[in-house]
Image 1 (cartoon, rainbow, N blue to C red):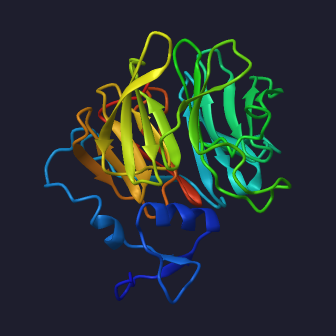
Image 2: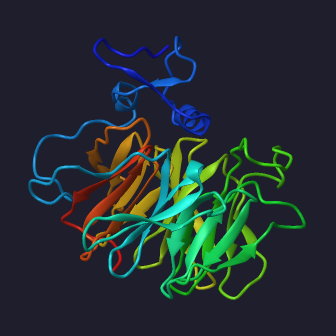
Length: 330
């Protein structure tokens, strides 16, 4: 049983966060059925501390900054070419935009189909995992919505969660099952399992690509487009795959013994996993950094701002940023 140490408080969290915490082996306090301890004690056994010294990824002297707050649960950050970051406040059914020029945050689209994960394509289309009706959307710059997928094989998807789009326009997305209280559908699993799908560029039907995972969640491709990383949050592991010329991921291999909610990658091949803070691994799967975030759960991460060197973090009720030595995709 995990109990909070003296001096630490417990904070209420949602059912969806509780499920993800259980999957990453962080135990909630027994006396408080809907609470989880704030300190990193439970996470420390999974994410070891690193020796003091210069960070391989953080800018010199960089500290975590709270950019905005008062949200219910933030998710799905993705940046445009100018470094503006779009993200979701999923329980409040809205997509917001953080402005790189002045740091202001504005409502961009509401209602937003209970969007969760987002990814901006090279052409400026915002691909959204619209969880209200388990769909995949494409949102144009003028905010008009086009439904890309309503299901697979004549059945509803479980619930598209996170998204990555390759340079040639293939859309990869995870489809775990997290039953929602706002669904009008049967909350039981609709598909044969919890899979990773690819919607090839120009296609109208998605194909299941990875069908042997317990509960896939976070997904990202390397900046060179050659490697796909998928977190199996149910198994507490993240895997790497080679992306073939046909877009099909092959050569599955264990990347690290840690599951993740959302993910991103930088220009040096490092991969960023989330959960209790942000944990950074090099391309070989060795942990090289951990960034503490003062929230119960860190859901997702991307690179934003004009130089794409601000690590933009969505964590429960707030958004955070920290300046980096590395950068994301421009």
